[in-house]
Length: 612
Image 1: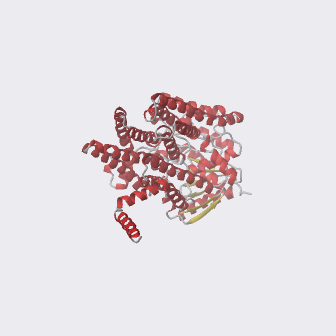
Image 2: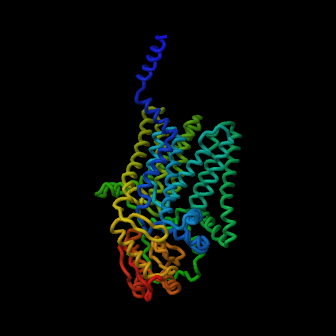
Image 3: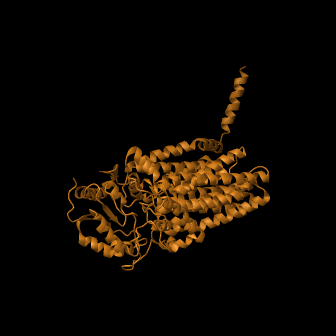
């Protein structure tokens, strides 16, 4: 009996002695693969809690969402009575939130940070399902949590990651039975339908990807060829029906409230643009700036039919249409400061990497199909789906608004695509010998360079949605509609000045109009704007802007006009005092300057009385 315990102890000691770093790391990786989503969730909660009340951007899209939500709560009809720019589900959740908690800027920020958290979790689950690697999955998800994209526009990366995950589950990942795949296809249809209700253009792009997967999916499905084709055809038809079905309740509500033509019109407008070539829009009006509420050009055209008939194009004086310009590629090596060179690099790198990776993995997929290597087929198709889903967000930043905020929306799903490309290359290229290993490491190095430069440049910028928003903000600002935030000392003086002046020199219900764009002022002062579209700049203004604006000033008699003379498109021509010089001079001569607070010039109507 004494020999048995001794023998057991020797065997246990021997096993412990043979545990090496690799096996220990593997066991930790397995734990992270199983439970890493909890770590991502905890990280997001702790991280966002540090700065969820930091900052108040007067020209942020949060102001637009909040003001439009208030309008919808007051009974205005979407698109018909107030310009949305996006589809109704961009704003309806905010309306429902305000119905529950009341108008609250802080609640609005929390809502969008919840969306950021969901994006991080989607990234984790996608990486885990595709690779099974815990460290890799947590690492990619953590990077997306740390740089979630411009706050108040977090629908964009969320939709890219949501459709990516659902398409992979529906068409690429293996399932125990065809019935499970059909369930995921229905879920993909629901995700697609939700996408249409938030952004019609993205819905169109994702529909194209789904139709492509309907053809490619059977290549990686198990079973007989006829069964695979049948499952793909049935599941795709069901997905599209689910997507259309989600539009019906909104359509019936729109018809009951009298904006069904406008609701359908936005779909028809985007269909027309895609049919005639969407990228022709790159030479026209750009997407409005960070904080603007119109995506590119199409929704502007959709809304044009709803504008008053008086809006005619009779130019008063030519307007310089200079929009935000992309930095030239040469900036990546000629600028004196490396941080600035990094920005030029990350703007242009996806244009190099995307075709390279799409072409390379398409060839690899074809080779795997010919040789019937099922794992390689599935992995290559996984990378292509991830690239395709992320590239749906490419036009809006590269062609319309090449800045850090819009780039950050694209990069969230693109980071997943880069990670999958590197993992797939390392996994399959090494069987090709030295040449294959060289190709694999080239893919990894390019992916790491793009992700590394992006993190280096974007993490210190609050416009990418990061904790940089917390820096030096230690002074509390409290205003109407649940505005309870922390600001820098200078910001506090400016915000408080605008708020106090508007609250004391205008009455509840009196109009305050802000040019070119500062909807947050209307929200925190609780004063309405009569503008159908809250955003205007030199690139989107109608040729008859001056006459139209004077007619509106005469009709609505706003109690105050706020002018922000910033270079909204980072050039002199985009200053309001430059492109709208006639309007600016009229306001200065017919209203008196109540005060200047930072960039904000607040003009009051003569006879404006103290609020009662």
